[in-house]
Image 1 (cartoon, rainbow, N blue to C red):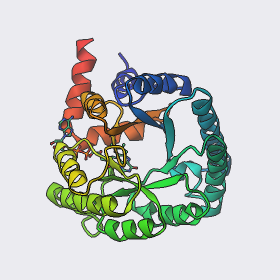
Image 2: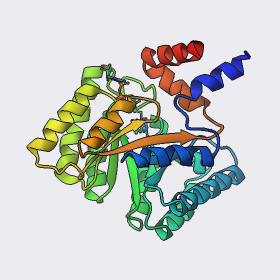
Image 3: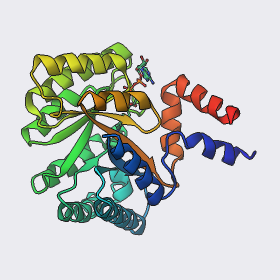
Image 4: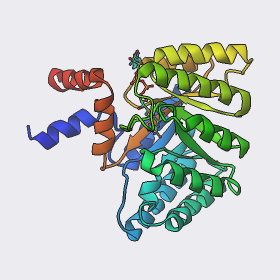
Length: 286
Ligand SMILES: Cc1cc2nc3c(=O)[nH]c(=O)nc-3n(C[C@H](O)[C@H](O)[C@H](O)COP(=O)(O)OP(=O)(O)OC[C@H]3O[C@@H](n4cnc5c(N)ncnc54)[C@H](O)[C@@H]3O)c2cc1C
């Protein structure tokens, strides 16, 4: 088998397919079991304005397809796919086009993923500028970054909705906590703030300790089970999606699809050696 074929087969664990049709089928099967989805068209760092426009148009078609299929799903996107590297204005225009379509389709929610620290401030700026006009726009913050609690307060002041995750990018010690226990502690302090001030926060982690502590904090703060949501990545901890959802918690799976899967797939493998072992064992047991 060629190296390319091997990689493609391994990636299929984390990627729902190469086309929107394949991804929508996955979403329909999640919805049947009470689980929500967020669709992510894979890709990052486009280099030309035309490519950025094309990506925005693909997101617009995706939103229309989700709405016409009546699926319980929203979309997640990366600003570098919409031209952030070329100009903030181009990126804002592309995002506005997506938000207008989403608004016309039942005010579908659009979440901006957070990329590496070189983009944190620019991503926040674009979010805060558009958030004034669009209540269907949300953002992601990364607990590994030392600036995150400050950013969180600013976003909460603007009434923004946040997905909290640890952060998938390698960051230097000057900017980011390096030890897992520090990242977990910051994560939980952020959850606490979110439960105090955010209407529908998203807690995105596969880490059982953080899930247990989040459940305790929710109980302590009397948060209803549907007033926040857990989120996990497609391909990881499938049993937990269905068990927490069956217990009445809102649960959303992040479903990436598309042909540009390599950077996303590489980040998943770098995170945990178990991910590598899982894909390798799948590869050779079929
Ligand atoms: C929905 C979603 C959206 C995301 N969006 C972004 C984004 O926009 N930007 C970004 O930078 N990152 C994003 N991420 C990735 C995130 O930042 C982390 O890189 C990734 O989730 C790994 O961290 P973790 O907390 O899930 O657990 P890990 O750090 O991978 O695992 C920590 C511990 O969790 C436990 N654990 C993990 N997996 C299992 C398992 N299968 N069974 C039992 N215990 C387990 C183990 O004790 C493990 O040691 C997102 C993640 C999710 C889930």
